[in-house]
Figure 1: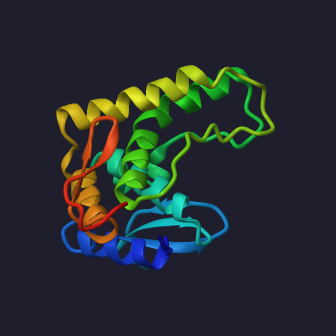
Figure 2 (figure 1 turned 135 degrees about the vertical axis):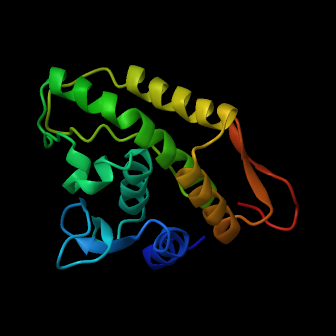
Length: 182
């Protein structure tokens, strides 16, 4: 399956540019979220280069951010770059559980491979298993209780484009028709 970022941009913008005044853009050296301002009338989710996973990850952060945070650059979140201490890594992981759980669902809806990102190759080694388990637990909880409106809308649009006639089910992407396999 071809996973072209231009498709993601079209899908996201069709879903959210109107009622959320937000667009998805690629090509940046580093990901960033910028709220609308006097020079740019739309909020911008900017992902790294043409990396499909970067786009999905940044959309996941946008889906988690509430209305007030969406008025702040990078949603007002703290970020320490690669090379974090074990304590900084634990803080990073706490704010990454929900976004990475949504990113996993987005990957599943697009038929794209997912793996949890610790984003700390040069930092103090930590046990990744608690974080991996927390992301998986949150993913399953989203499926069991239902997705909030924005991520639910995006999952539906991804499924319609990449995996028609399928739905996300707890534990797997379940095919509901033999007409298409994802």
